[in-house]
Length: 393
Image 1 (cartoon, one colour):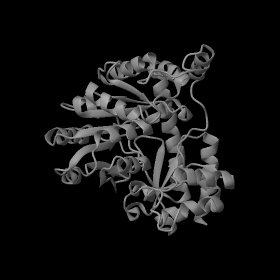
Image 2 (cartoon, helix red, strand yellow; image 1 turned 90 degrees about the horizontal axis):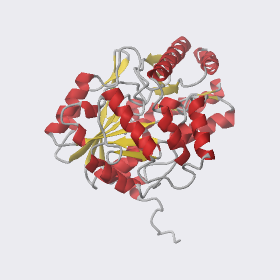
Image 3 (cartoon, helix red, strand yellow; image 1 turned 60 degrees about the vertical axis):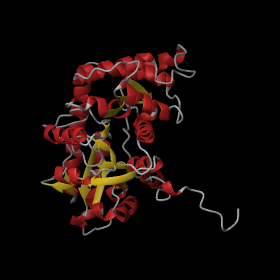
Image 4 (cartoon, helix red, strand yellow; image 1 turned 90 degrees about the vertical axis):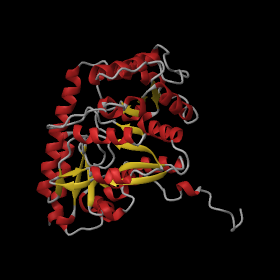
C-alpha cells in the first residue's frame, strides 16, 4: 500500500470509531469500577426461560440453521403478544421477522427502505447505532432534539414538522426513549402519525423498552394510530424485558410488503441467529401479565433508588418515565465536559457512566449530560451512589 492510497474506511463511516460503550466497559474492567454505563442487567432473567433454552439445545431444536424469518413458534408468539397487548393483528408467516437483536432490525430496515440522499428524521439524542445505520444506507440524518423542560426531556412538535422536507423518506422514532427516558404521549404520537400520513412518510419505531414504563406513562405503539399500520416498521427485543441481552433476539412487525423489504436486507446480514434461544423467547412472551408487572415495579423501585442517590451526590437528575437509564447534569459540580468527566470518573469514584454528548450530532448540545443505568442489583446501586457522594468534596 502506497502513501497515496485512499483511506481504508469508507467515507460513510469515517466519522465513527469504537463505540463509547466498548470504551467505557473496557475502562470499567481495567479499573475494577462499578459499571453503570452499558445497559445490561447483572442478574439473569426468569429461570423457566433459561430452562426452555436448555431444553431446546438438548432436543436439537435450533442447533442448526433455523428458518430465515425465525422459528414459527417465536413468530406466532410475537404476533400473539402484539394482539394481546395492543390489539395489533399480524400474520406470523408474512408480517413478523426475527432478527439478531434490535440493532440488526434497525440496520436492515434502514438499508432496505432508504435510498442514498434520502433524509431520515431522528429524535436526538439517539442511540449511536442510528447514526451509523443511516450512514451505511447512504441517508442524511436530520436530528430533532429532545430538550430538558421541567425536569424531563420534551419533543417540540413544531420543530419536528419543520424538519420534514420533500427529501424526507422516513421518521426514526424511539419510545420509550434511550437515553433520556422520555415516553411519547398519545397527543405527541397522534401528531407524528398525522405528519407521516400527510407527508407520505415511512416510520421505523424502536420500542425495545415497551414494558419498562413508570408512573403515569403508557407505551402506545405508533402502528395503532390511523393510517400507520401500513407505513410503520415496529421493532421489539427480548433482551430488555427478559434480562437476556446476550441472546440477541429481536424482531420486526409490519405490513407484509415492509417485512419483505426488511427481510431482503436482513438475509444478507446474519441470515439467521440465536436458534435455540428463539424457542425460549417464544415461551417468555407467553408469560402471564404478572411477570411484566413485576419487572416494571422492580425497575421503578431501582429508578428511585438510583435517582435519590444521584441527587444526594449532587447531580441534577432528569426523571425518566421509561427505559432503565437516568440522564443527569454535571454542572452542579462545576463540570462542563461530560466525556472528560466520564473518563475521569473511574479513578475519582470507581464508577463508570456514559457521556450523553456522544448521542448528539453537535456534542455541545449534550456537553454536560451523563447517563447512568439502574438495571443492577440494589447493593450495587447503593455502593455506586455512596462512592459518587465523594464528588461533592
